[in-house]
Amino acid sequence: MTIADALAETTVGGLDLRRHVSVEPDTSVADTVAAMRRAELASACVLDGDHVVGMFTQRDVLQRVIGRNRTWDTPVANEMTTTLKTVGAEASVAEALEEMTTWWVRNMLVVADDGTFVGNLSYYTVVRYMTALLAEHLDGPLADDVVREGLAFVDFTGINLRPVVTVGADDPVEVAIHNLRNRGLEQIMVTDERGHLVGVVTEFDLQQQVGCDAIDLASTTTGTLMDPNPPSLSIRSSIADAVTTLGRHETSNITLTRETGQPAGVASFRQIAAFVEANLDAADT
Image (cartoon, rainbow, N blue to C red; front, side, top):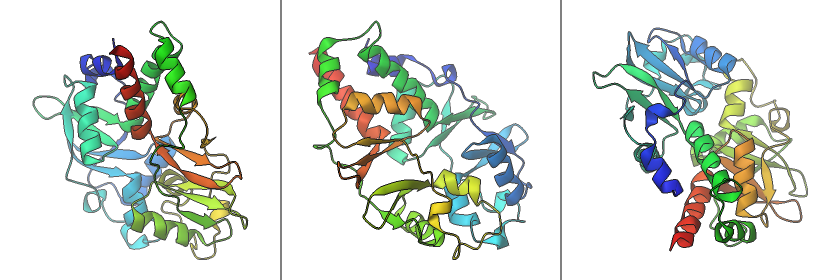
């Protein structure tokens, strides 16, 4: 069975849909962010009774909360995303993943036929499921020599990577926030004076470390908030290495570096999964 077959035959309801916190529409933005931070999750489902009416995510925190304290005491209903993508529990994971990729969303709300809330299908849940499938084809009972060799000998030098956007560790964190907001990025790389990678700042980092705190973004340096040990690989690492890294870390992006230590780009899970699937399809022909 190929990965595509497994995705098509597995229902959304068969995955873990508990990756969320839930709040009521009149919950304040500050309390919603606090709940997300305590749970260490990137989204909150806004429920009116047993029906979901909105979603509040780490992207909303970045765009509408950080440094904008006028929103902190307002009801989350005023700031939440109301254009929601939903999926039924009986839909296949393949169908849900296609919708997530098409609409570029990281969460899909799972609802019953009568519209009641069942759970949240997060992109990270799909990532974990797919990396387990990939591992089966690399080292498990479904291992195939052609697949293994293809993934072990192909690196990222010939793959179109997402662009490098950097800030300095001593730059104000408001510079990093500005770039994330205006470029639509999930993370930004932090470099030293020689251009070497020293860390990464993600939307999630900002949600957890800034959120609704009254931090002076102009005087706080990016280096104090960055992750100094982000999931990263050499650009010459194999696709197989990337699969292993995705499996160890709860992330949808891997930072790639050059031999000089300078950032080379960002490889997304979508790119890696697409390459692996093409490799598996080739092995089946």
